[in-house]
Amino acid sequence: MNDKITNSFQDITDKLWGWLSGLIENLPNIGIAILVLVIAYFLSKFISKTVKKIAGKYVSQESITKLIARAVAVVVVLGGLFLALGVLNLGKALSAILAGAGISGLVIGLAMQGTLSNTFSGIVLSFRKNIRIGDWVETNGFTGEIMDINLSNFVLKEPDNKLVLIPNKTILENPLKNYSLTPKMRIIIECGVGYEMDLEKVEKITKETIAKTFDTVNSPDEVEFFYTEFGGSSVNFICRYWVEATRGKEKLHLKSVGMKAIRKAFNEADINIPFPIRTLQFDNKLSLQNNSGSQEHE
Image: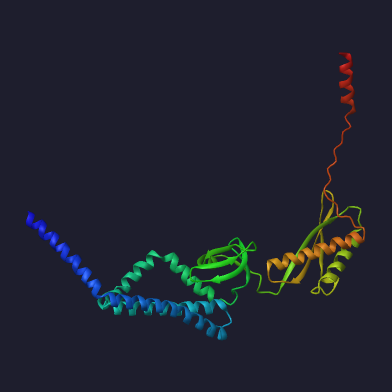
């Protein structure tokens, strides 16, 4: 029994010393393999930037140039990995990896359906001409500027400077509103005037003011003006006009400009923009008299 235990320990010791000897013998190869991987990593970055610049001269869509540059970088890194395995004399392991790529690829594909779906969706989005980096879009309840389209996520920067990562698959499966495809946006201003005002005069002043304020409006006739309702304290209307804008911030700014211009014109023309007023009436004299009479009787 003791001999068996001694032999087992001896076998374990021999194995450990064999591994240590093999490690010491292969230290130069390991160092070269690590060096090859490091060179491949930095070379992939350099080649990626170079390819992106060259592709940018022929392809105007930035998402496509980024996709090409990333693909080239992956190829370079994989090439460095295979060279490193060759330096370590792992040719048999390399052959086994390539031989099992088909079966393992099927298994991995079934296990990563969502990831692969996002990858292919990212490729499709990169080649779409109506979705470009820098466009101002609205999709899936988020609004902002497209910062990047990679192989997994659609990156938006919202007006408050927060980044939103949306899976590419979700973008393809849901509607997307792109404000940058057309050079114009429609501004809608809602307002109200007092019941005592001349409604024809209000409409005329509003249209003329908008036409004078914005170069994109050639005449007052291009301004759309509609009274919408008799409100609790005002006659309400909407005013609609077109401006040159492709971003939400520009739209808000131009709407603000229009509102200030209308307010100023109404003040000069003595047109009242009323605000809600609540009147409290205290005229229940009878109950007060009854209360005072009951107190005197007591």
